[in-house]
Length: 413
Image (cartoon, rainbow, N blue to C red; front, side):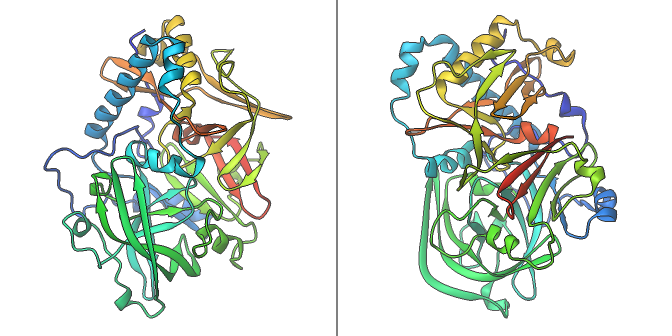
């Protein structure tokens, strides 16, 4: 086993592919805000069957950043395979609170799919990451005049008839960067529906490299996490155009989309398993066990409940350090190789739930040349065990986030 060896057979799927990549841009990298991939060619089948949807597309620069992402993962995996369990327990004594996990993810593991929205009246274009692991929308503002901000489409409140500003300041620290802004209220046009008087953060300043990549904002789609304004999910729940108060992520072979309301049967089918939301914070549900190659990896996880979080804003799977270490040792013992993965013989990862079907993911590996590793990172939180199902899950399952009934629907792709 070359710790760092893993491949995604989905790498041959076509335009819907999302590869694990780092958020660090090459030195001197420049991209133009109007140099976006034209997604019209991908829209025909989805558009013919759905009234309310947003086409999703890959951001630019995937190949080079994927290589850096692979190195980051494989280096961490090498460390975990080398250290003893006792040493690992010492290294993970400092843990984050659940509300802070997205700050860690935002630094290195954010989604690489974006989709178009319009903000204001008349609507101003922005390209957004749709993130079920956060609740607030953040949009680049023309009040920011830095080089980084000027790389993006920037929303101007002065050009909108429906813009309402506030004096509420917002600051977010994450990993190696931060952003600063001010809360405002505006109409947001999303997939053919209009969410009126929605709260969002106007980005007025950024530090770090995360916002040098080609997206203009982050559209949070989780439940309300604070008392500062209304989240997009509340707007979806109260929208009169939608009979089913839900949205569905579909990462298909030839096209990808965020669909609002009940999706067509050709997209989700009838074989849907529904998982109850255990707490309206993240899209989370109780978890019973996780097995890699048929072996449990949670034996040494600290006591307490296990929680699965379905997060479109995260490009990897995450576990507490002890579970990641156990998973890597199982893969090592199985003789994991890129060839084994290509043959479809590599160990799969299975999430087990009480009185619900297991969710098993076969293609949860990443390749760089002739080396492969699991798309797996560590995440240690205080007083709870959270396991994030990021984009490797969404490549294999159509997933519906049903806000009206507080449940998550999962169906095979």
